[in-house]
Image (cartoon, rainbow, N blue to C red; front, side, top):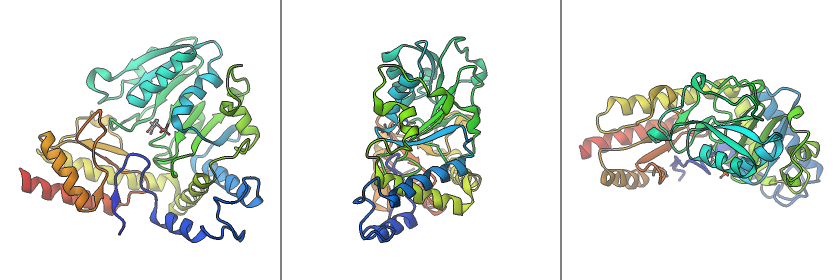
Length: 357
Ligand SMILES: *Cc1c(COP(=O)(O)O)cnc(C)c1O
């Protein structure tokens, strides 16, 4: 029996995608082999990379002059790839709005002057600093932000207007809401939140920005090389790219990002409205900055939190334990979480409240 899986990442995938992958597993595209067994140079696999690339471009409205790449190493590897490809004068601005944002900034410091231009750790990252109040450096090579903070449950609803190219880690909200890609220099995302199994990372970059990586940049981290080789410079993560293609096909069939965003807003509202109406559960994020992907919440005390996680798990609502930095619970309600899953969670929360108040 399938459970409702609220894990932050790797996370739930659409059931019909898993079923399709299962059907294909012994004989992919008439090859008599699974997609995990064929050469990445096989025409049947090249078609997968090309379709995933084309679907991502279509769904996100990615302009022609942007590269779309499928690479390895996770979003964390991109924390280094960003400065190694872009930090030409040795200076960049970082908005530190959460744990991953902080890690990106710390990695940037290895390569140059990574300036922390905003920091919301004073209130345990429960808000996004006003982007209009931030003073960006005049001579930065780029400005780095984390569009959705997976652990703390915040998101940017407005992106900063910057002179330097804007670089965004969108690991936990890519494809969940409409964005104007042309406003960004680079977007990257580990796929295991909203797109695919762990192992593939998406990089979208304006081509004119990626032509001169730093001399010390390893070949594998050179976006220019990945782009010129259509993500096939070396053996790519074939299976995750294949699943990404299936997820993107399904998203297109559903009506694209606009359609899924409406569903995501509906799911998030259902959960936040219930939390706000209750004096038992609390979400401490500033309302306007609340994520629609990751919803942290607590009961009145840590013992009840532990009981909640245990009993929810027994009821088929799994992986609700909050991140160790925050405690309590966190419901990750990515694109693949059905409305029924969130409704079942709210229903369980009501019953738990009545039984433990
Ligand atoms: C999960 C996550 C990461 C880390 O991704 P890895 O693929 O594990 O390196 C980085 N940034 C954000 C916003 C994330 O949610």
